[in-house]
Amino acid sequence: MALEEVAYSAGNAVGIVDVIQALPPEIIGKIGILVTILQAASIAFIIYVIFLITTTILNIRRNKKIAQIEENTRKMNANLEKLIKKSKR
Image (cartoon, rainbow, N blue to C red; front, side, top):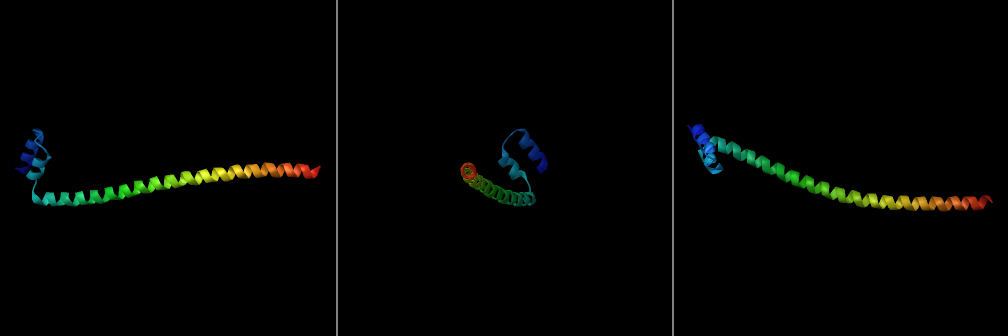
């Protein structure tokens, strides 16, 4: 009988509250556990997204420093090549 009430309520689009009230307490308890698991999973997901954002920011900064070091190394190599050419003359 409860399933018929749920189907009737869902068919008339009465609302989710009416559907939940029509469920037996055992199912509501199991749904409560599912909701708790989903909340924990969403918190873990939010923490993971924050971690990804921070690592992305740190990687961008690291890559900029590496690019500067590479540019400085190229300049030093060019200067060393000039010195080597001068010393050979």
